Length: 250
Image (cartoon, rainbow, N blue to C red; front, side):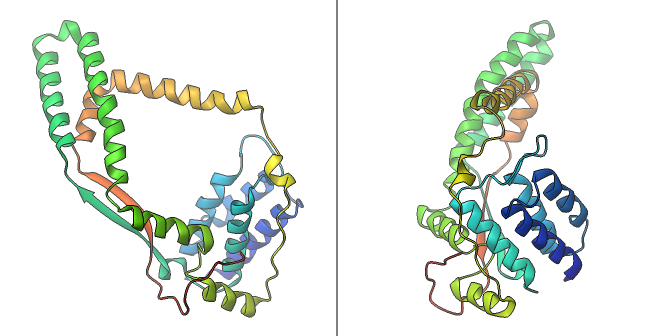
């Protein structure tokens, strides 16, 4: 379903944000208004945009060159009647590994220890956390390797050069149809900051501390989750390119 009003509203907000006519809070208002749209492309773009601004402290656009180009490609895509789901999908792979067996054994041992010695629950949970944490790190690394390096390089290249379009010809057709004009990136955008480096580090420290507490208190649940199959996803192009891929200027 194409929701032209929502697409135009979001595209106009992106243009205004890139040109410093609105700030992050105004962009966030627009994102919240259009994310209820039934247009799947608008919903996906609204969720994606939220990652690139701070919704707690107002600020002007802070984007490096790659992010600037992505914003412009998203604006251009919204000016068309193209469907994102017709170009990309999430490729998912699952696999079992010995790490699931280790997690299952650790979970059974921990539950048996909690049942037989409930008065030692603090020590037992600590032991479970010491097992669960390295398994969690190993699980993430193994999930990364569900796709070959070549597949990851191909996916990263598509995302960096063309996403949400399929290839350069797809971008060129959209430019011709809409009369879109690219705006040059301004280097000062990358140097803008909302908070000091210390304040930017503080949330990560708090999240890390919260994770440590969760691993300690909820170690049986963490081990249970680690018994599930490994899973990994990558954006996969399903739209057949109309030309040989070239480096895009957007």
